[in-house]
Length: 141
Image 1: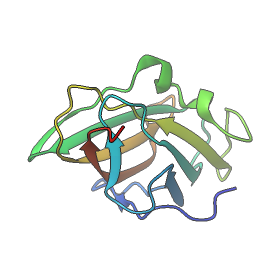
Image 2: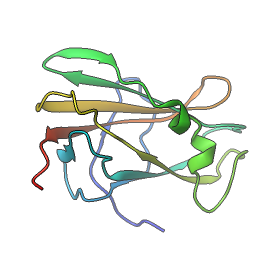
Image 3: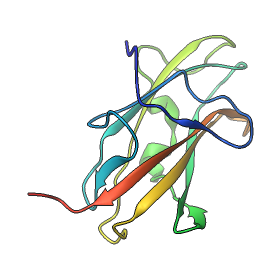
């Protein structure tokens, strides 16, 4: 199990961030994500704040002072498919370990971006929320 991760920021809505967020290949923010290439997998460790039947991921991004939706691909939206060591549903207090992998599109500009990542349950209650910073970079290969 993960014991440490990167330092993330809380969302402004007061919903607690995960206890641990680890992004493969990133030891501190901002994390470098290569444009047009599947980026590091993010692993999140958090406690279920209430009984949960399903998990759903969502995110927004802010770049150059503009905030916009950053759609999650349909095949990655169902968080229950990316739970490690257990499975949905969860009872209040259960430890949840889940993953998400980003893929910055080849059209993304090479600029710093703040991403706000959300995990919701089947009733659209926010389970956890956090912010992290990335830099979209070109491949060095």
